[in-house]
Image 1 (cartoon, helix red, strand yellow):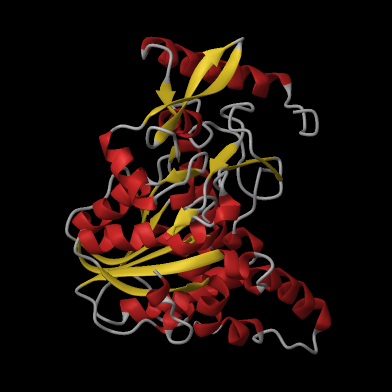
Image 2: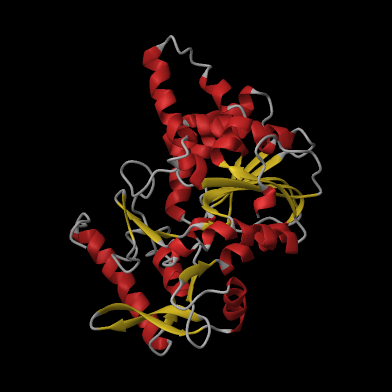
Length: 382
């Protein structure tokens, strides 16, 4: 794509290796693989996928910036919700996909400030490169708390505590479906004319059932998040007692499948540019989709979890006291206050992350109302 930055030769060579791997899998499968499998390889193929190779993903030098990198106030505010959960007799936090480690660092620092430190802070991270970056940042920001941090390769069993996942569900492989003349069709990937190409086939039984429930009109294309929902069920199975906080961009079903979204929500991020071509430089760009929070809530309920809250990110942060935290810096000290206020603004603005991002809470054997949903809880919309 001519309007996107050209990668250096070594990055191009890396992408070509992953392209060859995916092309080989397509050939071995008879010329077609589901898009979900393509996305899985593009993001997570060992040593080659976007999240498993060594290139910087997060921050200004990467491809996108998440809320914890924008300002530590985000993590400090989230810590207020974490502190409430920890006060109920739970003493552990598990963060799924900690990215740069920025959220862990600000959460731990704030929990120390309010004397609510967890006994252990677990990080489940699939990327060896990100795990190393997380360790380095925590050693820099909160070296005296590093002994509380434990990296995991798999979910614990009978876990009791808080689970946090910020921008995790959107990066899970999705199945593409569209309404067809003979029923739902699944989008897959073939190799034609020296390049990856879209190819549609009749949807299999599980996907067909999920697609038929949406009553897609002919030609309407969208995503179904079977893996994200399976992940929620896996979290439920691993938890004995506690709260799960999932923070991501997306919609409830009645907004997700509006007529104006007839091409779905699939999006790619490369060097802070957003575009819609998942076949561009596999391994060098992120591939995401928005989250269907109705499906997430349904998966949680089916797995024995209770829906504890659902609201927009801005409302959640305001409920947790983000304005109070911002005012720790006196507004009269303009040189210090104004940059912090500017960093908080996109977290709260309805035109930026404040409304597009949502927070959903699921729990098991946890009765107390969560402060993050004290006002503006939209559970009824799911």
